[in-house]
Length: 164
Image 1 (cartoon, one colour):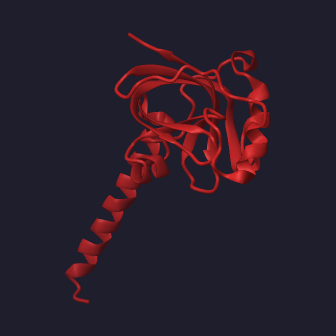
Image 2 (tube, helix red, strand yellow; image 1 turned 90 degrees about the vertical axis):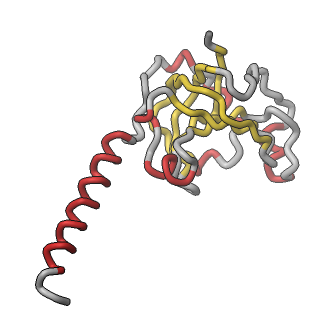
């Protein structure tokens, strides 16, 4: 390696560290607001399939954003992709893997196709109002990190309110 290229390599490394640090500050993965536990339905946890994979960051929070997509999971959950109003609720996995979206999961929204998940939904169907794609909403529920994939999400969702 030539002597002149060493300063260039150092400058590139410093720039990359600075960019990473700025990204970590902007996408800190922190709850937008901490709500009293009574604002969330703790009973929903008994219907979360494999709840041990979720690390709770906040027992109850609310996130506002726009619904980007809806997807029915094989576990019976409805997955909403939100473009959050506050990007600080995202972590870097949300940014790079989910294209700056936050997942919100309405448990037992439909019958599970996965036989293992059926026990979690046995005798229960969610009554959470489901918004349309493009609507601005406020999602209230537990704020967690899914340890299997690394991203943050609202899971389980207690309620979804459509905003004007």
